[in-house]
Image 1 (cartoon, rainbow, N blue to C red):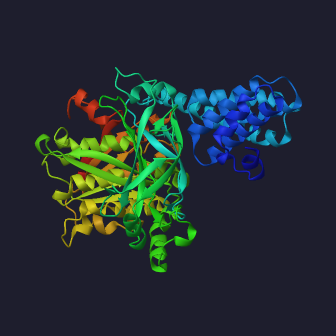
Image 2 (cartoon, rainbow, N blue to C red):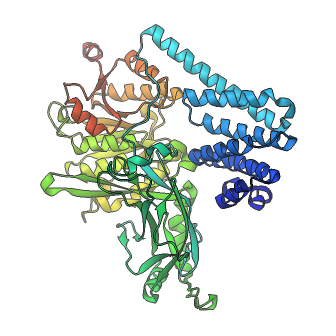
Image 3 (cartoon, rainbow, N blue to C red):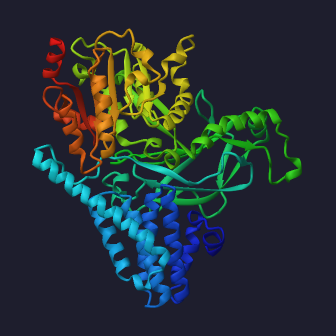
Length: 592
């Protein structure tokens, strides 16, 4: 731990086992102080890489460790470091109670400034100022909304139907690949969509009549990676290096193990010389009746290096330079976008008698692209709505019940919603336009290419049936964008706008409403469908802006569009809203 955290200054890679050993050495004052310092260092490093959940765990452990220390200069310094780490971790949660707790921790730290290192005072003061400003803005906005009579909202509540997802914490590097018969480490954790793990949610991973204290088993499989789909590779096997481990399982939300990949000589030759690659897939083996589903995760494409440890390095089969260059070109988008994992989402569509399974593979890049680089639960709600389009056909397809010719998704992120809609509506000739900020568009394009098999029916036009990815910064006039050719020559009501989980940052409310208003005032646009989840205390300001711009907002749970029960089932925790220009505005436009 000292070597990695001190000499290498890589706090994120400090082994948890080393910290456990230090933490167990309660008789040594020096060990406890050093353990506190290393836990705080690891928490800060994890925050820089977006792992908020583990940072919260480490910062809490650091606080608990230092509480038992007797007063001394060393323990006071360690306690200050732990309080700062905990406050910074809580600041990332953004809710009011977490911000107040972080503010109190910083106040305690700064009150004892005489014993606090000068290197900690500056970041502590800056953090306290940020938190005070955030709390003041929240109070001011709520008061302002109440005075204006705009809709106000209660505390941000957790979604009881939210998904959890497996996250890769340690995995073989794409550039290095995997070697046959040589051990490698794999570490996974289970978190919600925010990267957090709540022990109180463990019971929901199991059916009600199953003991939630049991470890949750994991399934590790190998699939051949190809744009034409991933097939299981039967002659490649993964084995545990420790003889006493029979299978992988999650304990307290995480699992770490050492594995070895084995194969027959024929299979290894196939993978090496044909330049193919594989993905390691990790899935939770949940029983039917589990109240929350856990999304599986897989590595990026990994090349099998044809080296057998039992034969030594001298008997490695040579890999042609052409194959090596070709594989480097294939993984270049993953490295450039910071993609470390992929995820397969499974949906079902069609009638009960002809139910079809839809598997969509998406790459995630939350460390590079932030919230735009990961899958959010509201996307599933929007997909489910279109899967059950008969329930809300009047809103989705209009009074004529005809399918739109163009669907535009705002804030598409990974593109999972656009990809699913492209498959669900491919027989209707609908063009899907997935839009987001410029830096996110390459990730959209990568995910479209990963799923081209879904649109390939052997026809010459099949490549056009996949979503088209374009940049659309909110607030920029549409005529300045590159895809205006799609909007020309369209009949009235031919465009439908969709959005999932786009109301989260007050600074983006005005530009988003400006783009929405411009789209909705176009004669070709029939309206917008939004999967909404409360993400910020000031969300009422967004709906007030909609009203100011003559945009009418209707919930699909109203009796006009369907029953409340069916809406609740479809939404999966998100609220589905229909946006359109008000009748008064449409009459005024017709008068002009």
